[in-house]
Image 1 (tube, rainbow, N blue to C red):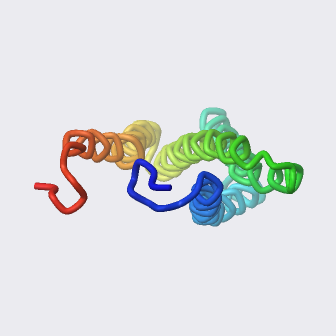
Image 2 (spheres, one colour):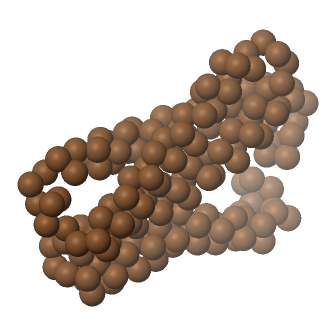
Length: 167
């Protein structure tokens, strides 16, 4: 059976492919999240942490909570797979995992924005932290949301063409 992207696969094969692709994406994100969370875990035990003001500590705690939430969201599909194993609910698993992955990427972006703001705030002061946070937000919004939306909209404009006929 040929589906909308021209692949000759059954619905079950398509679900298996989607699940495999999703797991690969989560593996990439998970490594970065684990490194970020690890650094955030040791930060309070550093000498300079005691000299941070209330705003910086709030920013730190925000980044830490977001990193923990990201870890939970990105690892959840694996846990769900274990619970749902051999229950013939792969379609529900893939759909729920897709939602969790999107939420995990959103919280990861927010955690990275908070970390960028925190680092610049501690090193250069509050105005630099605000600018860094805004800059990081623009970068993540641009690459993680804007660019995919742009590519998707351009692809829709060319849907009337065959795969070898794109202008």
